[in-house]
Length: 485
Image (cartoon, rainbow, N blue to C red; front, side, top):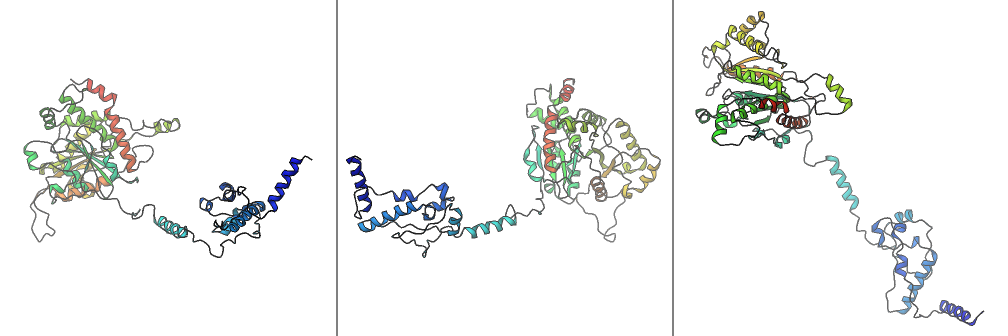
């Protein structure tokens, strides 16, 4: 053996046995104690506390030797190895056996544990759990009724664009009824729909859900509603009020205001006519019940425009393109709304049984070829409204949906008792009695499904938005407009 190797072995043994401090670099005890976090400390909170249980005996010995050297030096503070805060957690994580402390090691401060900073965590977790068990949204009751509407909102503006603000007042339930109103200017559409929604004859105009014509508006021969308005009653009845059909005042408004109508219309007259057809086609697609209001009997041009709108309305089952469901959609019957003709401001002669029968026969002849549900839903002889009409109609084959309403009493309420004042002879029931009968019959109309699958209120709103876009982009309506003079 060479002298160089003997000298190296002699110097290594002298360094191991010599207790005095040597200038040799001290072993990196803090680095050795800070082993890989993935193997020793599964939780980030355990990284700061050293764990001697997961170290081998040689590492512990090296650490104790370095501590003894620092204690003998007297100038440095000895390194203190602390145990983990949770012995059970460390014992379950430690992969190897726990070695005992070597002689000369610093005694860990196990008798005086360090206060855990995460002590209130179980209390906070329990408090959060109790809060989450009460409901997803604290302070909101799931069984509470939806907020009631006070005024109507617009879903189609004056520029015939769809407005999405109405969906906030709808809920996800399928028990609802959609009632729309269409008619000529001043026929009482907004007033009748407001009465069906809950207003009374004694309410001022400003409290009506749909603003009717005021005195100044009637004197100026102007319209009141522009576009389509929506209101949802507490009984979940969705009412739609529309602008007047074929209105001359609306035409005058477009001409005087110099409003730019779409380029596809050749004149302002054609624009007003096509807008009336679009609104009627829209109502025939999204409404269960359509109230056709008139204040005199009858305008044949207006009734024929309803037949034209029925011909031009879009298909309701064309939104789904799946092959498995397309066959079932072809077999399902097409949706047709129930149409109720309301003669508003009827006089005493209109309530005569002969006149009422003639009006029903006239309407039946006009809508003979129509697929709209015009019969068997609403009439004057249900609930013994007018007993003489029931006796007269026994020999009549027509059962058209025709209802008469007299002029509304604005300034006085009906007497509660016959002893207060004797009512004058009118030849027909009062407006309030007939309005309650109309409301009951309209609310009891069967609700036919608009689509093969049932729609909730919110889904109906999206369906109505798609229908309106389909009506505006309809090629059939565009072709009809091209053929207009």
